Length: 313
Length: 288
Image 1: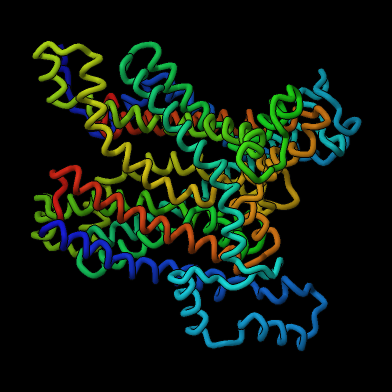
Image 2: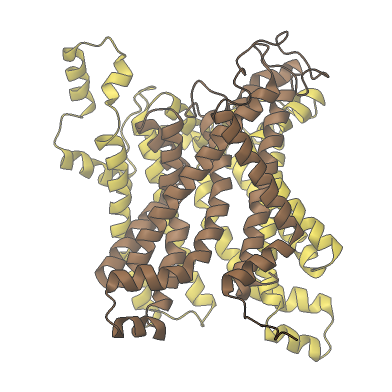
C-alpha cells in the first residue's frame, strides 16, 4: 500500500471514530444521565415547569435528532448556548482559549526542555548512582497527589514566601505574566516525574541497539554517540509523544486553572461540572476529542514519513 | 549418598524467586500488606471506630497525644487517615478488578477472533481513548450519583483501555502458536483454547497492569473529591487533601501532610512493585 492510500484511509477512519465519540457523549448526557430539568429547577418543580423547560432546551425531540445535533456540532463547532451563563458557547471558548494558552504553551515548552535535558543526563550516567537516584526520584514524585503539589505550592510560594501572585489573572501581554508564573512552575514540577521516566526509557531503548555498539567500536566518544546517534533516533517516539499531548493543552490544566482563578477553558469546564451545565461539558468533551483524533492522525502520518520501517498495513 | 534431585523451576517459581530477591519489592509488598490489614481492621470496626469523637480543640496542632493534630471538628487526623485507607484500598481493588475484567475480556475476544469483531473492538477503544479521561470520569460519577460506588464505577470503566490493547496484541501473537494448534487437534473448542491455554500465558500482563491501575485509582480519587464527586460522609484521603485548601491559609498543614504522606507511601509501593513485577515476569524487558 502506498502512502497516499494509507493517508486517505487514515483520514477516512476519522469519521467512524468521531461518530463513536458523539454516540458516547450522547449516551452519557442524554440517555443515562439524571434528568437535567430536575437539576436545574430543583426538587420542587412542577410537572408543567419541567415540560416547558424540556421544550425550551430541545430535550423533547426524538433521540436521533438530538444525536444528529451532537454530530453536527462536532463539525460546525456550533455548540449552542450555555445553560448557566446563557452565553454562546463558541464565544466562551474563544474567550477562554487565550488565558489557557498563556499558561499551557510556555509550561509545555519549558517542561519539555527541562525533562529532556534531565533525561539525557540520566541516560548518559545510566546504571550509575545518579541514574538510580533520578529514577527513584521520578517514581516518588509521581506518587504524590497532584492536588497536594498545587495546594502546597500555592501556600508556600504564593502565600508564605510571597514570591508570586496567589491567584487571579490580567488580560494583555505583560500583565498576565505574574499570574501564570507559579502555575507554570507547578506544571513543570508535576510533569518532571512521568516525562523523565518516559524519555529515559526511550533513550535507553536506543542505547542498547547494535548501531550504538558499532559507533562505539569505531571509536566515537560517548557524547557524540548520545547526541548525534541516539538522540536522533529517539526523536521519533519523543516527537510522537509531544504531538499527541498537544490536544490536551486545550483543556489546559483543569486543576491549576481553577486553583489560580485563571479564566481559561479548564476552569470553565470545571465550573460547568459544578453547575451541571451539560452543553458546556459536552462541547469541551467533543472539542478535545476532535483535536485528539486529528492529532493522532497527524502523528500516524508523520510516523510513516519519518520511519520507513513502519509497515503500512 | 542420596541422589540430588534437580528439578527445574517453573516460570512462576522463577519469577517469585526473582521477586523475593529484590529487596525493594519485598519492602513494597510488606507496606501494601500493612495498608490492607489497616483497611480491614478499620472496616470491621476493630480500630478507629471512634474516629468521629471530639478529642480536643478545633485545629489542634500535632502533639504527643495526637501525632497528626486535629481537624476542624477536633477529630484526630491520625484516626481519619487510617479510616481513609478503607476507601483507598476498596477503590483501588474493586476499580482495578473491574477494569481488569473488561480489558481482558474485550482484548482476548478481539485478539482471538479477529476480523469484524476485532475491528469493532478496536474502533470502540479508539473512540474511547479519544475522549479525555477526566471528562469520562466526571460524566460517569455524575450519572451514577456521588459516593463510593460511583467513584469505583467511574475509575473501573475508564481504566481498561491500555490493558485491552496489550492483551489483544499478545493473544494475536499466541493464537497461531503450535501449542494452540495442538490443543485444537485434541478437540479443544474456542473457549477452552482461549481460556485454558492462551490466557494463562498472558497473566503476567494482567498482574503488572493491576498493580499500576491500583495506584492510578487511588490517585484519581483525590481529583474526584476535589471536584465534589468523591465519597460522601466518611473520611478519604482525597477529601482530607481537598479540605486543606481552606486550612493552609490558617497554617493548618497537618491534615494535608498526613493524607499526602499516607497516600504517597502506598502509591510508591505499588509503583515499585509494578516495576519489580515487570522485571520478574517479563524477562524481555530486563534492565530497562
